[in-house]
Image 1: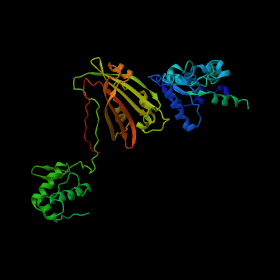
Image 2: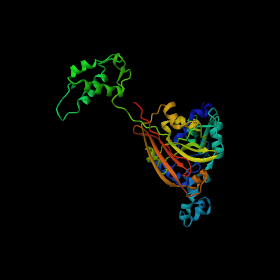
Image 3: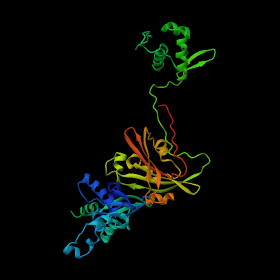
Image 4: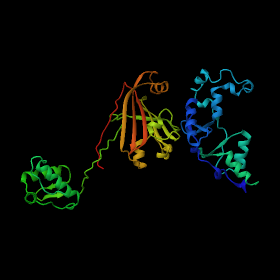
Length: 158
Length: 247
């Protein structure tokens, strides 16, 4: 039964994703994302942010980068009117800030032997995450994604 | 194969020709290791040269390590036959301290990054490949003297991410533990103006000048390691050691 599957059955290698240290600037993260997109032709990989001892600190997507460049984007008024002078000189300055300031900090993780229902489904839905780090003895061993969990759980229905 | 000595004027000196001929016989194994080569008189007859010529040739081959002279017994083929192609391998020790100087290392970073700022060119890798990044500070008498950043493509040696690089040399780990033999080093020495981060770590002021030493380490055509070393210019020296090793 799908519900018996463990996280380790769906785990994805962390190296499928670009890795940056927290001190990389937003500008450097943009370059990383664009270079990674060359192969996949998709401009939406998640970038994993690490500290100096290779501990996972957070995740970064195009969304966080855009908000980092233009914080006004996250304000409701932006939907209605757009923001005057968005992405001007101010954005260039903001691009020099470290990604630690705009990333989504990692707060939740699962272990390889956790059932996918607990780990992935609950945590991801409850906290609106795209991916969840899988950690064993404090070491990052991979990630699980909504895609694989959905495929697995939905195959029980079909 | 030409086994005769030529006496034409424009030919090489006689003893040099003889050296070449004898060397080929040694390398082909025509004379077995440990066996005695023909005595001087015989060699004179075989090749129709004077004793002096034979002596000069033998002396040179002894110097090169192909033959060995045993007093009163004769000349013998050495156990080790050195191949003609000696590979010159320079081992770099980027910094050698005078003996008795104690230095310690602080590992500031040991993590994974992506190639930015021309790192893909320096390491000759695609732009979406992961890199292991080391940042270490060498300290002498509680004073930081050297800041060293090392970049190694992750796929070359993933295990290095977990290794103790405070007490071990990355170069030695690569060669000895992981069998990755370096065949070439390209280095560049220049003067650099310190960034704030670099200056803070070395106890200097931002913008002050320091010696910057960058190196690319190759295994054949693959860059396996790129290092960026900054040294305080007021103390200690960069010391380069070249050592010729046999293949």
